[in-house]
Image (cartoon, rainbow, N blue to C red; front, top):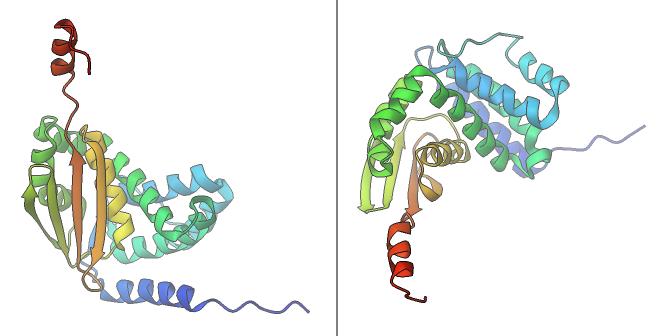
Length: 222
């Protein structure tokens, strides 16, 4: 008879964290269906249709429509299972969460509302980061968010009462900045309490190709 392998202490802590997050959510706390679809697409690309079916089972086979609202407690259940499924593909649960955050954000930014959000930034990364709190209000019904600028290309984005673990939003924010054309965006999340997190956001200055061409025309050798 094969011996059962007991979950490690770290695994038990991660599972317990998901349970507490779900318990903290109310019926009024909702997220757009496009983020559910982003999770399922990440699983489909990474592990195939059989794995997608296993993840759907966590939501009792529910079907999702992109801009409809669904309980975030259901989303947490789905992401918990998907992270476990995708962890071997991405070398761990944290990177799996980042990938799901990136995929869900692509779906949001491809929608009419998401395209408008990007259009309002007008290709300006500073403006986009300043607009992040309003962007999140379009996507979810819960939480308070604010931006504090530390420099021209450095900000701290604070989230209060948000249910997702930090790596998920690291993926969301990285994808948003990439889509607006930020150069080498870096996002580091720091957990303050169960539902409160802050994200240190930085990116590089754009390359001044005009200056380089001007020097070349003058025969300046670097």
